[in-house]
Image (cartoon, rainbow, N blue to C red; front, side, top):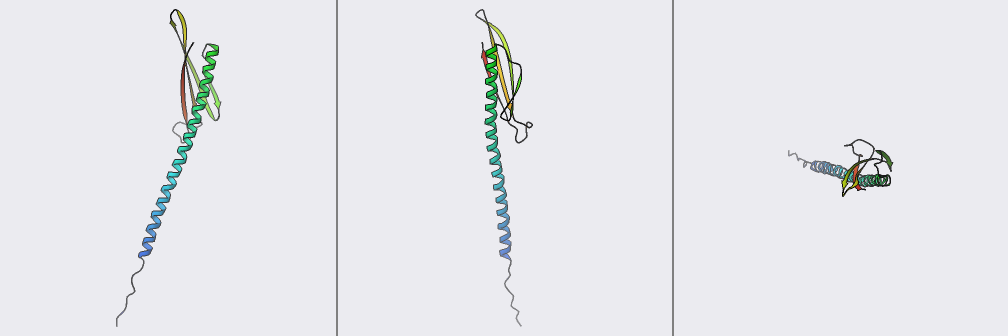
Length: 131
């Protein structure tokens, strides 16, 4: 008697598992790229906000120095979720027998957190004013 052997089966299952693994890896990669893109976009907006907060602190420092003709004391301002530290230094020099004062005003805006953390942003701007 001849026994007839049934054709072997199971190749489709191996292919299906392979395709499933590849699609899962592709989905995980796309999720990682999407999260990175969103985080980068948020950091860009926060950087812009920090710049304008620092710029506001700088404008305050320059106006204070020019109005009083003296450096304002070091100040920490709270602007739109940022802490802005404004520092001023002055130097007097003589030019054509007249005393001139050079003011250097620096404003540093930083968000909450510590340097190196994901949500931390810091921007610094400076200006030199001569009176």
